Image 1 (cartoon, rainbow, N blue to C red):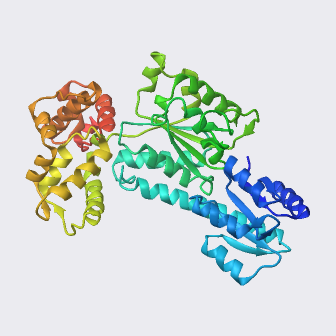
Image 2: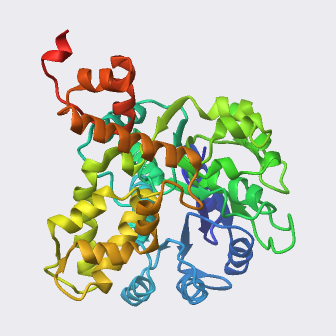
Length: 460
């Protein structure tokens, strides 16, 4: 898989030949142009990771070409080179955003260093931009519950491996954060992390988005475009909501995962890919397989390293930590310093079921910061903020739009919490009182994030 796609613009054929060979040996894909006109044609037809522009050319000026592509909105990283460099040309190029200015004759080692550092910087900035965009949407992997400690251990193990990871969990549990954590702790951390939401891309464009397309492949495809697999070269591709991928596309994804090669839409060239895939869904994939909505063979291929994210109601002890974290973010963003929860306000949050999980908690906290008139957020403020949701909780077990398994888990949790409280937290006594096998009670409490205490009865 190429390290990057480079366009070299120079009017000296010997330099074009030398650079094409040298960069190709280092793993780059190289296009060359002998004049400004040819370079503009190539830039209009396809995208590049970086470009090398000579300053003086028979049909124009490399710095002027840089000015035009910047005026058109292009952020293509450009390195200028010249055998007759002037201070004025260097200053103009720098002001237009040139990455560097190299003097001829070129040092191959210096050029390779500049290219490598530039691509690392561009990828780091892209990831930082994505992280800024995502900040606060689902929170960080915050929590000290047993469920979160287990999850961090699983992430650490998955990061050391190279196999495909399949992340499952309800909406708002932080599946993308897990993908980022796996990538960041892996040997691919220096490579790119690309994300694709399979549910957000129209079915007629999903193949192009994933594999790229050639110029003229379909209406509107005015130039070649690399897809997510190519852009994730040497790194990780996060396929979010993979359970919503169309069946026809599932077959093509399965082939790519098996063969590790792609073809762009409208193209005939087979391109090898070196990408680790982390897939995620909030759907019941096994049920989708039984119903013919998801390919079982693709599920088997994705589900090499399964990770299941716990819902927030299964780790209620983490809610205060998350709530304070989101409170700090929200007060800073809304210029409301000094706000804090009362014990009653926090207790009401902890008691709520959070069908939207961590994302819903974040939204509730921001709403409280905006709407609460005082600096303290008490039980009444939380009750008003939750509104009909809280009323529905107290009025009965059923809530419109909430799946049965969620309602059943909440009912089980309430029963076990009250039973443990009645028996003073003694697991053995609670198991006897409920007519359960002790081992079954242990498993059920672990799944729901509940803990009892060990007493004499435990040793009977």
